[in-house]
Image 1 (cartoon, one colour):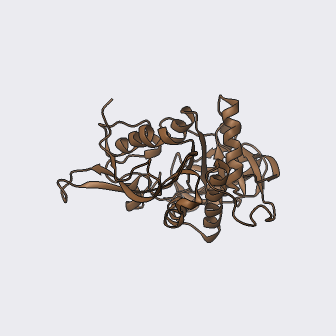
Image 2 (image 1 turned 90 degrees about the vertical axis):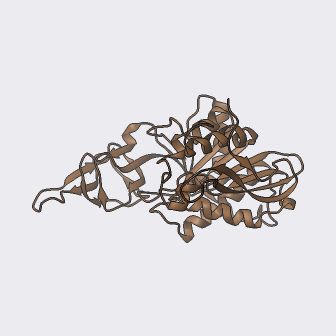
Image 3 (image 1 turned 90 degrees about the horizontal axis):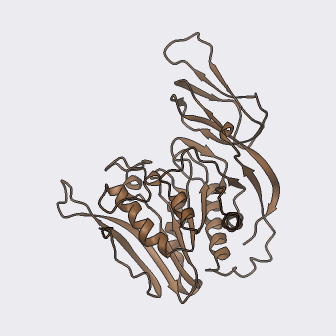
Length: 342
């Protein structure tokens, strides 16, 4: 296979703290010999596991970029045993534009793996992560939120995997993140996802959904900041801070999405009225939302009901909804008050 056109300005094997870029040549109208410069930080001390921390896989999700930018500015080599690779803005063109996908090629990075070294800009980024960063990593944490169109109860997530031992390792890492909820996530479409690439490589992978609406909150950032540290401690790259072991124990609620009935999809375009709040328990057949015709008045709204009982874990965020949009996600509550373990 062709070499990647991306070159790092850091040396992954050098001890210390390095702030640099992944440099991707990109010729355009305003810069004939220009490049896309994707910021990254590498913190290394001695031998040990490698943890890859990523945010901005989608450009309108902000908890990951903020938490990882803060970590990159504060983490010191003396704090780690092993190596931490921090990429706060994976799809940097999308992040700069505040969009889910790239304004250059409309690429959704999280549907572009394994990528191509001779493909579009987004495919080139995916290829570099697949062959050069993922290959170095033992643990991967990819921080997501709902972006502009979805809102979630804050959870860390893993997938059901064919390898039971690998899934167990991922579940332990998920619990170490310490989000209020921990989800066994069922994807509508997993083809081309970063998640799938990491899992197929046999690595420990955890993702998150930490709110949404195209912004962050003080509460979601507290979860992200604490979760990143818990993940690094679990991976063995960082130690507990003084007094951390004696802090009051925290818990998480384990959720599961066993089948497609968890998803409620809109078959109408119009004005959305959510009838239940995130985090509430709902019963099968209960009205979750109504969609009103915006072309005329006087028409009765279309009602969307829960296909199963459980916890309302996600909802459509904007006030207008399109045909095919996910209106709501209902998840099973498997177990409450599970201890958070690093």
